[in-house]
Picture 1 (tube, helix red, strand yellow):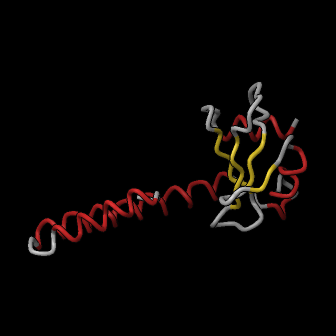
Picture 2 (picture 1 turned 60 degrees about the horizontal axis):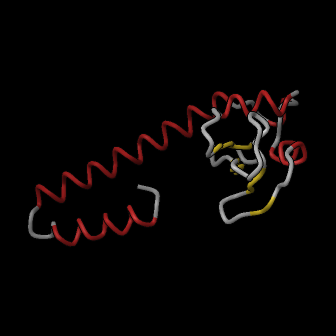
Length: 121
């Protein structure tokens, strides 16, 4: 429920369910479960990514090693080093849990571990 569309839909459901307490409780529990899942994923990612202080890859280093880096609203877009890329399909953002650490999202389907391995070469 992180997109604007999902947030708008949640507001509509909440408005429709004002007179049905069980329905509102159900959707509120769904929202809490999604928030718990996102927090669990952030914590899991934080345990896998090393801290920049330990001499590992930092956000600045990652951006220096990527090609055609461009600033976007959510971070930076670049060419994915894990596959042959003509259009920028890699989104790089800063970790919420550990500031200064990169988070990689390849919209072509490359796992972030493959991107990290390609950057370390």
